[in-house]
Amino acid sequence: MTYKIAVIGGDGTGPEVAAEGLKVLAAVSKKFNFKYKLEEFDFSGKRYLKTGELVSDKDIEKLRAFDAIYLGAVGDPDVKPGILEHGVLLRIRFAMDQYINLRPVILYPNVWTPVKDKGPKEIDFVVVRENTEGLYAGTGGYLRKGTSDEIATQVSVNTYKGVERCLRYAFEYTRKRNKRKQLTLVGKTNVLTYAFDLWERTFHAMGEKDYPDIKRDYAHVDAACMWFVKNPEWFDVIVTDNMFGDIITDLGAMIQGGMGIAAGGNINPEGVSMFEPIGGSAPKYTGKNVINPLAAIGAMQMLLETLGEDKAAQAIEAAIKKTCLKMKSMSAGKMGMSTTEVGDAVASSI
Image (cartoon, rainbow, N blue to C red):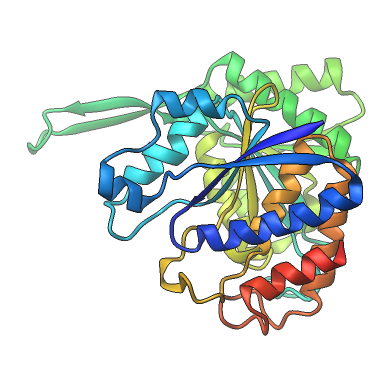
């Protein structure tokens, strides 16, 4: 089989880190004997400034023909904040119904964490975030805007369909991960009584009926934030809604060593998924060959795992761990290696 992969280098350092992920893809494909075909798409800020174009309906139809999408970064300092994020990232995410945001929180060896007395054994869990509903559905509006009586509403939209499919993915992922086989629902049932009543009822009904082998747990989101820092070893897989997932995954990225090593996937299990490093475009480092590409390489690992190339994905993870042992830091300009050297080290360890 030949996998068709769409590549969106994007803005800033995005093309640089994506290049290192593709370098690792080339190495791992040779070892595990699979083929792929790449096609690049320019959805960058520079293109927008020149043409006014973002992601069109025709672009979406083209992307539907691919097996996966590999994204470098979105964000250009010359473009007003929100335009590229909504016109590229969210446009693709919603149009392709990528209803799962998957964020591994893994502390690799020799990587500094701000959490005292915790190491790779304690920091190893995954957050499954619902990705298309909640407060991000865009339901709400203004009344008497611009006056002293202004009212602004933002409604959290939670459908049974959206909740059910997110929970089912989380249960299945917990079973496949096969570590502690524990799934924790993170919510706020004591305040957000309507939305999280739906989440909680569906969570327990599904667990009792279809996943009796998976231990179920619950935590309020504020308590989960405390325990991420105090006892990260308590977690295996977490499932939560869109807003809470957005917040706690950035906290997770910090305890795993920073944005330079955090990868994520926007997943449609029945369609086309998109994978990316979390750290953004980091424009001040553009062209300097100093940015950390490990998050982008981790995103490639997730891409291959989602395509079913489990052995290839495992080989990339092992190579990332080996490379971490050679690096002085995960921070840009302080790694003791250049961007391309980090990519070379991972590729040569495959």
